[in-house]
Amino acid sequence: MASEHFDVLIVGAGLSGIGAAYHLQKNCPDKSYVILEGREAIGGTWDLFRYPGIRSDSDMYTLGYAFKPWTEQKAIADGPSIRKYVNETARENGIDQHIRFAHQVKRASWSTQDGRWTIEAEHDGERKSFTAKFVMMCAGYYRYDEGYTPNFEGVGDFKGQIIHPQHWPENLDYAGKRVIVIGSGATAVTLVPSLTDKAAHVTMLQRSPTYMVSQPAEDAAANWLRRWLPESVAYDITRFRKVVFQQLFFRLARARPAKTKERLLGLLREQLGPDYDLDTHFTPRYNPWEERLCLVPDNDMFLAIKQGKASVVTDHIDRFTEKGIKLKSGQELEADIIVTATGLNLQMMGGTELVVDGEKVDTGKTYAYKGAMFSDVPNLVSVFGYTNASWTLRADLISEYACRLINYLDDYNLDQATPRMNLEHVEEKPFVDFSSGYFQRAKHLLPKQTTMAPWKQNQSYVHDMMDLRYGALEDGVLEFKKKPVTVEASAPRARPEPVA
Image 1 (cartoon, rainbow, N blue to C red):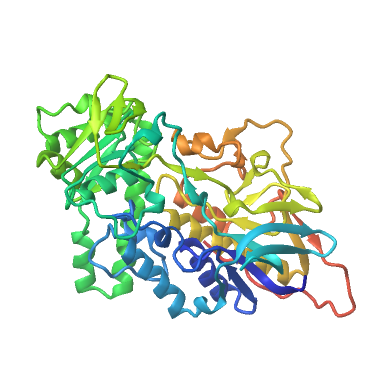
Image 2: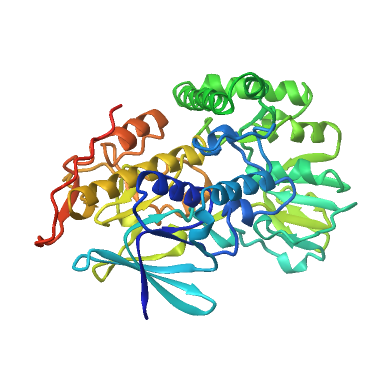
C-alpha cells in the first residue's frame, strides 16, 4: 500500500482540528500537513448533533477561537451558528483545502527506526496509508456512531417511537405529541424547552437532579463593547472576563461547596417559586462541580415548567410499556415519543488503535503528560479540553504546545520526543475528576494522572497557559532522541523561546 507523507497529520476536522491546523499554519508555516476526517463535513460535534435546540453550554467568547472573534449577538449560540463559525474559520484560512473527508482512521503505528508514524484510514471501503513525523489527535472523546442507552426492560413493548438525540431523525413530527425525555444532563435540558414549541407536553424523567444555572443568551456587556471598541479589542476583553469568571466560580465551588449550593438553589427558587418541590427535582446529591453544571439560557426551561408545557419527574424506571414508561413508584407515564438523552459512549482518539514499535498501547495504562501526551508514546499530542470551562481554551494551548515541540525538534535536528514516567512511587488518580456516568463507564480507557507535575491535571487555564505556552520543553521528563548524524546535517537554528 503506497503511502503519502506529511510532516504533521491531524485527526478530526471539528472545533479542535481546525484550530490545530490554524496554529500549525501560523507557527510552523514550512510544515506540510493533512487533516483526516471520518465524516463528510467540517464541524465534528456541531455537525453531528441535529436535535431541536442544539446549542453550546459554554459562551462563545471562550468556546470560540482566540484568533477569530465571535461576532454574533448571542453568546450562548445554537448549533448551526457554531457550525457556520467553524466552517468560516477553515475557509478563510485555506484549511479546508487540506481536509480528506470520509477517511476513518483505524490504526496509527510508530516506528522508532524510521522516526515516523504510519496511519491507516478507511475510505470508500479501501485502506489508505499515510506517514507523518508528528500526529495531532483532535477526534474528541466519544463515539460518533452510537450514544449510550441503558438496557431498559420492555423496550420492545412500547408502541411509540424511541430516539437517541445523537441520531435525531430529520423532519421528525412531534407536533401535538406527548414526549418523555429521559435524562437530566445538558442534552435533556436543551431538548425539553425546545420541544415545547409544538409538543402537547414534555416530561423530563430523571433518576437524580443536576445543578442548573440560568444565564442570558446575549451578553449585554460584550455587545456594548463591540459597538464602541474595535472588534478584536472588544473580543479580547470579553474573553478575558469570561475566563476569569469561569476559573473563580469553579475554585469557589470546590472550596465552599455548601455556600455555592445554597446560592445555586436560591436562584432556582426565585425562578420556580416557593411552592415548587425543589428538594426532589432540583437538589443534587453531590456538591457543585463534581459534575458539570447545566446551563439554562434565558430561563427557558423554568419558563416552560411554570407555563405547564413541561414537567420534571424524579424516579427510577421499572420498565417500558405499550403506552410509555412504568416507574418504580408504580406511576405510569404515557408518551408517543421517548427520547433517551442518557449520555455518551466515550472512546479515545476516535477509536484509533495505537501501536508503538509493534506493541499495542493501552491508553488506560498510560499517564497523561501535561494533559497533552501519553507516557512512552513519541511525537503524538492528543487534544482534550477542560471539563470545568470551555473546551477550546485548552485545545488552543495544546495546539500551541505541539507547534513549539515540532519547531524544537526541527531546530535541533531531533527525531522524537517521548514523555517518560520516571517517578518510582506515584499516587494514581483518574484523568477526569468527575463523577459523571459517562466518565465513570470509560475510566479504564482514559490515561491516569498523579498528584505531581507534569503528570497532574490542574484544570486551570492560567497554570496551563504558563506551562504549555511558556514552560521549558526540556524538563527532564520529555526524552529527546537525535537523528542519525549525516554530512548534510546543518547546525541548529537559533529560535528564541517565548518570554512570558
